[in-house]
Amino acid sequence: MVAIVCGLFVPTVAYGYASSFSYGTQAKWNNNLNFMICISSIEEKEYEDLFVKAIDEWKDRWNHFGYMLSRGSGCHINVYIVKTHPQVTDHGYVGYTSLEYWEHGAITKAEIILPTHTKNYVSTEVKSKTVTTEVLEPLSKTQFYRAALHEFGHALGLGHFDDNGEEPIDIMHAYPAGDDQDQGISQRDIEALNWLYLGFFENEMSLRTDRKSYNAGETIKIFGKVNPVLPSELVRLEIVDLSKKLYTSDSVPVDRSGTFNYNLKILPEIYLSDAFKIKAFYNNMITDASFNVKHLGVSEMNYSSPETDRRVTVLETYVADSSGSRVISVQPNEQVFIRSSLFNGLQEQAEATYIVQIKNAEGFTVEISSATYNLVTDQSIFSQSWLPVEPGKYDIQIFLWKGISAPEPYISMPIELSLIVS
Image (cartoon, rainbow, N blue to C red; front, side, top):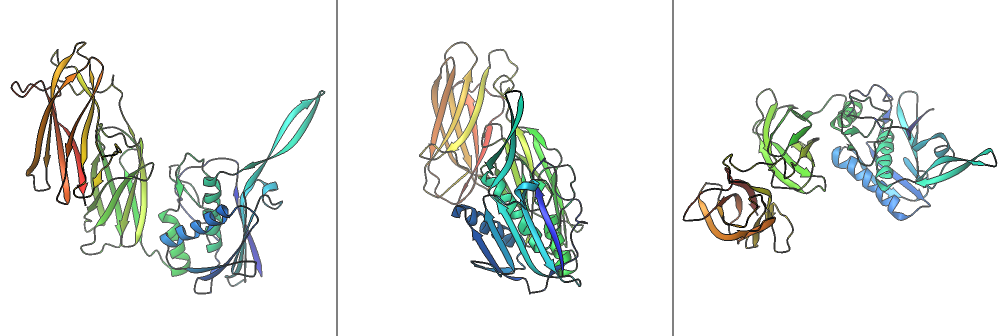
């Protein structure tokens, strides 16, 4: 019987999805991947729930295993959630997995130890002598959850992965990411499990953007590659903000070489987030990439024409529901409000006509409305309501004129938004 120990170290942050998995042990489970998992916890139940959530995330990404939960010990995978543990905390780990397997490579048991606290030492001067005090600090829920993901990856047979220098950080890297950094299960993790248990790379999928950072309004070029290529199968893209709220989604064709491309524009008027994640789905494969958008301030934005008296700036424009919350999709017969916040740099009050035109997916105008407002000398908010009835995607154009009778624009180009009614 052979044993191998895998730990997740505390010290530093490293970046990037794994570029190789050469450190994975050549051992695997030989039980048809049906696990009995015993969880023993002396901590709050929320930690146990986080561990089960971590198992489910692995199962969602790689559905070739099943499991049942139990108490006590004597299971295939035994999990101990404790406040501290000398084998773990004293050695600077935030998690620890021990695998037992026969020399021919069949894993027989895995034990996971997950402390909820880390140990630090604080030194102080007392009467010219240095006194060192041991201090226990709780892990954040994010740190504990990532440690649970990491250690369960070891229990499946994965080792520590290398690093390619970019975020998101692979969950199987030896060093955890900070709470403010992106880290998770990568497609490379899934490929490693396929290689270990299925004997080949079942599927491959890559996804990236042409840059990591953009100004609002710039085009984000998204491209990737899949293997194998399936006839008529489309890549499903979802773009979500930092709160995981859907910004937009679309389906993209794949060419014969497996390559796909997509252009996206984050409008300057929509302040959903500064950070976005792209999720790509294809033939049971899932991968993701991330990018940042810089929203320019009032002094940097220029929607006005160069003519001298057109100095009205649109700060933001969005669609809101009846509660005032910003939305990108609503149900039929749900009233929405198209709102714009404007800054008047004319240094005097003026009138402005706010025109909203809405077209359906076929390009036909289904609604056009206008209202004349007073532009105060500082900031104004204009709003027009609309009640969508039919499901579909709608394009919204907003014009800001000096008046209906004299259609001279305050802004050189119309503002464009979209809304999904479903």
